Length: 363
Image 1 (tube, helix red, strand yellow):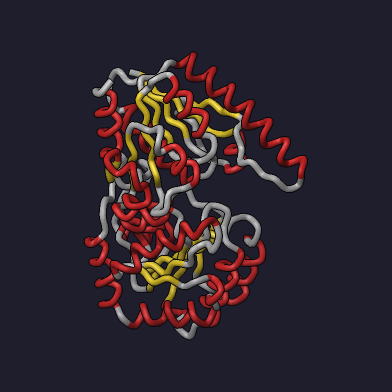
Image 2 (tube, one colour):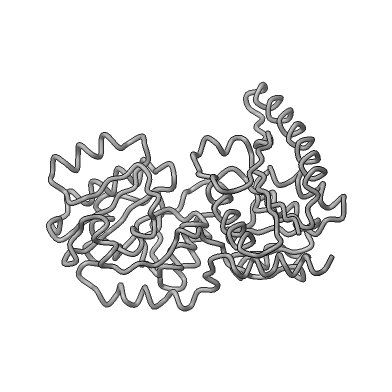
């Protein structure tokens, strides 16, 4: 059996696609291929070990004018490349994880009567998946709240959760703290703004940690991206803050297993990882991109597992107060962890792989 998996260029698309591939590759007699945009190379996502093919499709921008012509040309080029890939690989099923690069792949598969499935990571579906829903044989969603967003296609929907990377595994708190050289006696707070970092979160969190009267009781993990690394390193060194600063961290399971509290964005992958590790969170949703992140975060806040702070309300003093409140109220943190039991599916990709194999049996 041959299965083609396609995704957009961001980690939020590619990581769950890789998780599905990990599960499928564990099955005997299955050959897989991953189709992703050439632009994904800029995100430095490690794809070694996967059979990867790149296509030229990119988001179509209309300003400036030259950008429109370039993106349309690349879309047409990627459409032809998709046809060549499908004709050469001849898959039995195609699974797409969103992004404009999935549009030509799935439409060619639909035209050739190949079984197709789309997976939506966010609560609110992206434009590509909303369009492709009518052509897909099956729609997999991460959250039950997404079902109503697909309207006339509800009979195709299955809730599978958002597949997580195979490296995302629980380790003991003791082992995780030892990884960072931290004390088990201190409160551990982590902050991250996505794979590229967030200048606003970096600024306000670093101030909150350094002005806190509880500074001696805190230890922090800060994933800041490249841009602010040197400035933050100097700031933390000057005040003697017990903070481990990283541009990027591959071993995310250590961060989650060590943390008492996480301050973060609300990308679909981050939300799914919070659910998996059951970590109390202060979430600052990215305020753009059709409010996808706010609606993702709302799932956790309604359950009582997290608190949302809108970016235009964010300040160092608010973060400082919220962190100190959590330090002073261990019972609240326990309640927030317990609240994750109210939230839907948390899965490493097994459910989605089963649904893909089920679709193959329908051929």
